[in-house]
Image (tube, rainbow, N blue to C red; front, side):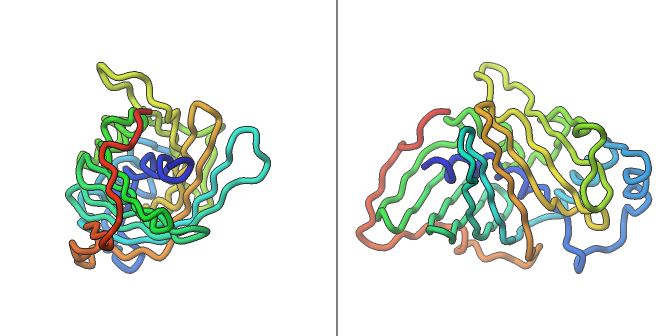
Length: 243
C-alpha cells in the first residue's frame, strides 16, 4: 500500500476544512481576513478555516501529489480526484500513473486496486499516524483542539500573502507517537481555500498535495462514495498494518 495509500490518509482531515470556492463566496468575514493578512494573526486565520468547515456538506476536487522519499533524488508524482461528504465519507481516487481507489466510512477504510483484483480492508484507528487526521474527518473541525498551530519558519507566507500554518498533531492519551510530525498548509486569502498541504513524516519523507477544480455543496450522490467492486474481486479483511 505504500507509499501512496498510507500517505493519503494523513491528508484526509483537510478535506473537511476546505472553505467555499470563489464562486460560492458570500463576502462574510472580510474584516477577519484583513486582520489575519495584516497582523499574521494565526488565531484569526485558524478561526476562519474552522468556520468554513462548518459550511461544507460535500465537495470534490482534483489533486496532484508529489512525494519526496528520504534517500531518493527523484520524487514520486501522482494525480487524481477526491470526494468527501459529511459525516465521515471519503473517496480518494488515484488516476495517474496507476489507478487506485480508497474509500473511507467513519473508521473503516477499503482500498481497491483494479490491477490486483483485490479490495484490502482495515480500521483507520489501528494506524497510529491517522488518528489526529481522523478526528477532523469525523466532523470535529477544530484545528486548535487537535493540533498545535505555529507560524512557519521566519514568518513565511504563501503566494496570496497569508502566513503558512504549521500544524503539529497533539499526542493522544494511551497511544504511541504519530509518524506524522507536522503539516504545513498554504491558504488562499480571499476564500480561505487550502491551496496546498505538505505532510512531514518522522522518517524524513515529505508529501505535498495541491488542489484545484473544486465543486462545493453540490449535493454529491452517496453512491459515488460507496465501494461496489466488480464480481470476482478478492476481499481481504483486516489487512491494513498498524503504523
